[in-house]
Amino acid sequence: MKTKAAVLYEMGTPQPYSETTPLVIDELNLEGPGPGEVLVEIVGAGLCHSDLSVVDGTRPRIMPMVMGHEASGIVREIGPDVTLVAAGDHVVFSFVPNCGRCLPCLSGRAVLCESGARANLAGTLLSGSRKFTDAQARICHHHLGVSAFSQLTVAAEASLVKIDPQLPLEKAALFGCAVMTGVGAVVNTAKVEAGTSVAVFGMGGVGASVVMGARAVGAHPIIAVDRLDDKLQFARQVGATHLVNAASDDPVAAIRDLTGGGADSVFESVGHEQVLLQAYQATGRGGTTVSIGLPHPSKIFAISAASLAVEERTIKGCYMGSSVPRRDIPRYIAMYQAGLLPVNLLHTHTLRLEDINAGLDRLAAAQAVRQVITFADNQ
Ligand SMILES: NC(=O)c1ccc[n+]([C@@H]2O[C@H](COP(=O)([O-])OP(=O)(O)OC[C@H]3O[C@@H](n4cnc5c(N)ncnc54)[C@H](O)[C@@H]3O)[C@@H](O)[C@H]2O)c1
Ligand SMILES: [Zn+2]
Ligand SMILES: [Zn+2]
Image (cartoon, rainbow, N blue to C red):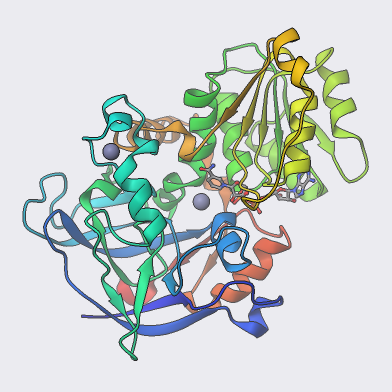
């Protein structure tokens, strides 16, 4: 079958992307679902900084690739042996498929699924298959098993989470990365307790979701850090109690001052190793620093070795909110529906697929929180 999709053929194209158009809108051939696979019509697909990081080369991936990993859609066809979803189901994608059989899966750490990691690195589905080809018969790889910047996609059933059909699908998309990662960082990774202090660096979709999660579990104070005042005003709307502009103030001194020596849990959701260092320095004795942002793999983060022992510090990595997607996405949706997570506010722009390169420019300039691509032709 045919599908219109945004393909990245080459990383590292210079800005402005609206002129250099690294994402090429092409009509591709899409092979139907094999065993354990599902054809999904995409309804909403969010633009995440991790997409931009593949475009600019910060997260090197195998090329060419159909981008997009934060999405929702409707199941249109199931392959043999699929049991988790049926045609017509509304789904959110998880960007690590989990096999349910490897040791991390059996240990409740779906994010670390070995087969999922292997497939994501190779740009294939969980089965190893690749479904997209372009007009020159070149294979286009899958982005994290999702490839959501396409009218239609094929994914492993292990990449899908069936959701409440009452939830508008444009909003549902945001649960696939920003919300699952940010709220999961609070609930699963740091296990933030009520009344403890939280600081969050970077008020994009991920950091704002950390703030929402912190608010939902009763953390206090919740200190938001960004370099842009409008992002800080936005942070207040989603639950931050204190705001620090890192362009004009020293965020480490400000957080230490506000918390009497450092916050209990500090989250880095910018993707810069220097900001991770600031997050560590702003963490209090006995506290936890959570690394969510994704700098280039060559970047190094150096700390005082003694401080970990003497101050009983913890540094934790957080991938996809340390989530178990089929357990956590329905939970976060229920929290949203109960008014505990203002996810609506994350959705700042709606784009057509054709406007995706301008969307990358807006994201690079931090002028958006979440831009959701909708597929009007699909409706
Ligand atoms: N670990 C995971 O599973 C996971 C999931 C999604 C995204 N990410 C990563 O998380 C990071 C954030 O993603 P996003 O989509 O929210 O990004 P975003 O670009 O929407 O937001 C980043 C924010 O950081 C702010 N910022 C820039 N420099 C800063 C500084 N020095 N101090 C404070 N704030 C600063 C920007 O103004 C912007 O508001 C990226 O590195 C992304 O790749 C990781
Ligand atoms: Zn993402
Ligand atoms: Zn597994």
